[in-house]
Length: 177
Image: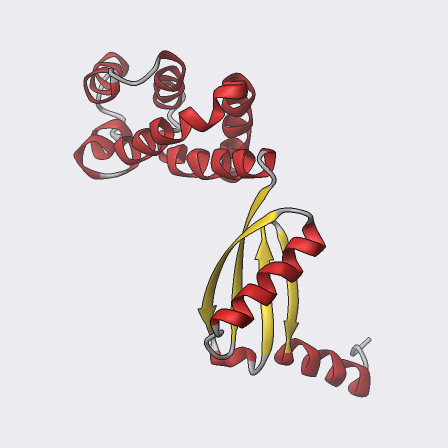
């Protein structure tokens, strides 16, 4: 199973288990992600020569003060050899939580820096289109020439001048079929 699919499944299972306490899991999952994927602890947990019992002892020593259920998730990820997925699991969990609260994270790429008013207008238009409160992150890429490229979760909205010019070129030249 590809890592992304596995991470989404772990996140969905954790989210279902968390229920109404999902927001309380976020700091625990972030801490688990750091512990399992960064520094010396990550190196030891990935090492196949280290015994499974030793790995579980390391998890207990580093994360033992976490609530029982998030700690069990960390133990399971280590037991299944999936500790490297911890960051993705935490990120997907955050997306599920945001969605359940009517929020969505969007990233917008523009050719030039947006003014505060333009950011506000774009946020409002995305809210109207999705029905969610939008947390907008912006970046600049002059290669898109103009317009905006927005990503909300798995959804991509390409309103860039570059995309429009490419579409026009395909219409004029033909699809090449």
